[in-house]
Length: 86
Image (cartoon, rainbow, N blue to C red; front, side):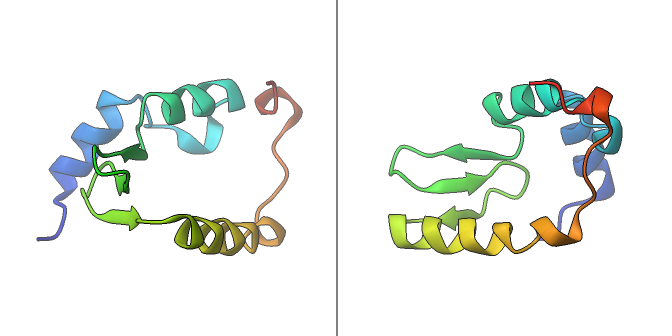
């Protein structure tokens, strides 16, 4: 079932993700720690928090996902200096 705009907005509010493009790196890391994007279920799978879909079910898939995500690096801008704090 598709995610409704209301569900997406509730998710963003719950994890304070309303300004992801201006979020500091520290706040982004906190959102990751709070499992705003992904979480590990009791069976050891990595799940997408909003949709509930399985994203990764084994280490080979994790490696493939990391490689795929790394491919986006060249497409993304560097963060402004104030957002790149650790």
